[in-house]
Image: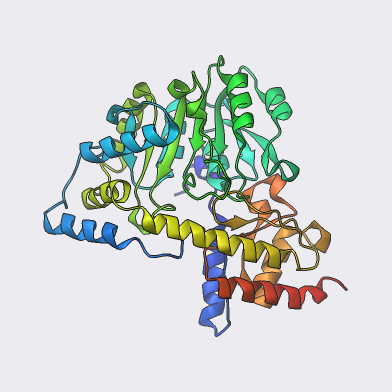
Length: 390
């Protein structure tokens, strides 16, 4: 029995493959600094954990509505409305197990073979994977380091065609940490407002930013709310990666389609995690603020330290928790360098080329680790750099 041919078109996240390698080295007695996985190293805030415990004690252990608990959808709608300066209701919200279903389900509902999808490159690998899986045409837009890893708007204009059905935006961005400026978002809206396409705005890192202004959502631009899907969730902001809970905010006609796909795949999102998510949104935000402040401190220290590694040049990211140094001056391809750093220096990181063609020449580090470990990683790379300077 052979796998269906479609399985040849689906990709993976290299971060988990690298994690396995790093763990194997550690099991063999090697010292490894883990900077590969994109998840906060902070515990889920205590009030959220306690809310989950209460929910279990109160019997929130059974099926719930496919679209999500009404109380949580109300809380999400209120939060999105206030933070994006728009007006949405619970009828626009779909609660799903993690953020990825809000990539997969809308694409599955919207795309026909041959439709074109414009997406950022380098970018989250699942975008490209799902586009290819559905036999749509991937149309990458390079992110420009000199523009703070924002889009080349002239190139975007040139690549829009009658077959473009979806535009993916991600700000703050994985893997670069770039934040698309408000002016660029407004220009993008002007380019696409009258076109027959949908925007998938991946805003999963919206609360983790270091710029003076809050990252700007394209839904805040007049005329864009009705043609945009917001992807957000609890994993990054509240250190809830293992809880598997995310959500999408979208036009009602698309909600119906996503609900059908949920019924056919997951039935519903776990009820007790949804009760905890209500507490996350409506309870104290102090722990989130502390986490972001610590990420800022780590960013400043680690990016400065990376800049001292021969052959590295590291821009300071505007958001998320990733450093994405340019390593072209080492003269070593990104994959080979990432493997070398793991095997010889015990520093686990990701090859920038795993995020797309335009990620070649870069390495991604997650600075979701202690500042002591980050400085140790930088020291190891600086010490071993003489091996690539020969």
